Image (cartoon, rainbow, N blue to C red; front, top):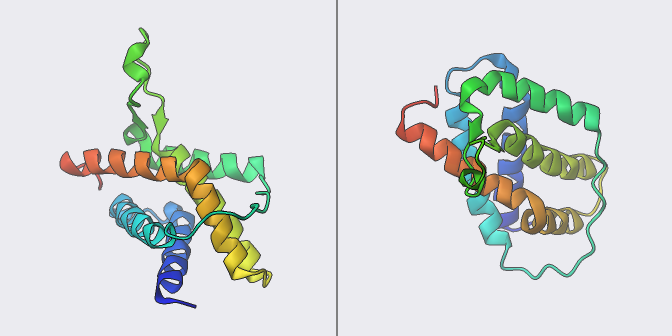
Length: 160
């Protein structure tokens, strides 16, 4: 494995572990998540130089587990969860449609699926390709939105 792949795997494992420990009540949990998202984005950036020509493995969605994680994160984040999306102001009801809990859940589910495949001794290069494909099509947007919202919270000293 290359240093970049090792860095990405370590970061993915740490992110998933941090999300899984969300119930521990750590005061600086959101700060840890913010730091990990920045590292994850940097790790993905080193991998994006490669062409994405593979057909991804289909993600197995367990909607009950996904909703339970979302609910847990939503409750933990509380009133810091919702944020404005760029198109929200176009509607008269002024509804915030962005959700940090949703972003973190979607990122987690995509990355955790790859880690489970890795535990089953599936091909690491295919897993990396799946992550890159998913990043481009889905969870990359969640990553950027979550980073943007956490940055806003950090400027207001609201991460803890």
